[in-house]
Amino acid sequence: MTDSDIITIPGAGSCPMPTDLEGIIEALSHDVARMNETIRKAMAAGAIVEIKRTDRVHSGDGRWADQMSPVVNLNRAR
Image (tube, rainbow, N blue to C red; front, top):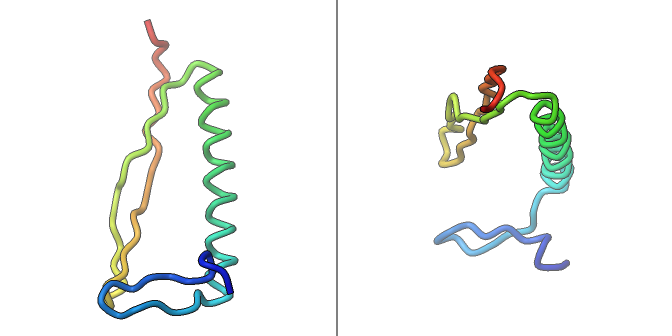
């Protein structure tokens, strides 16, 4: 087990990261990279793109996640 296999829980020590969580984190990283590439393409085509947090969801047991949405301005930069 390496340091990257361990998650730290404040006040509770640490524990091995669940295997399914590793796959989810990898998929999330891949999806964000694809989104960033698409944002660069939109910018190159003339759009102004901003990502805004539109919501924050809570699990009820101390975990949370931000939900994001693009704000796209099609007016050309001057």
